[in-house]
Length: 130
Image 1 (spheres, rainbow, N blue to C red):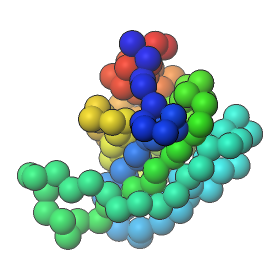
Image 2: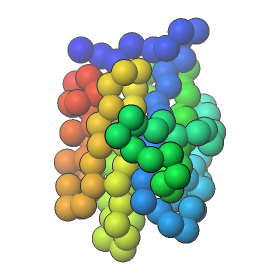
Image 3: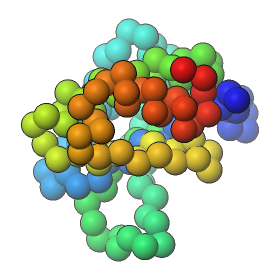
């Protein structure tokens, strides 16, 4: 089942990065996504992260909102996020949450070491066919 766009026809994907004490993860990811040629036309902006009821709001968390007018770009976006997470997972503890509409997936640790596996899981659990 494909992911449906938000109102106005734009596809919106929220990416929440937890546990980065330096606070530069969102900056790094935004730069990574903005330099990816496959994501031309995708807007990536900083936003406030979602705080779950079971979480304290004082923790370090950063978030980005990626907005694309073309839902076909979602596969490239998922692949780019998977590549970034895998590239940094070997050097730092990383936990990432990706949210599309009401659907959300969280990954951390060894699960982030395989870029194709990350992309496959994101596509599968967020509703896009692999």
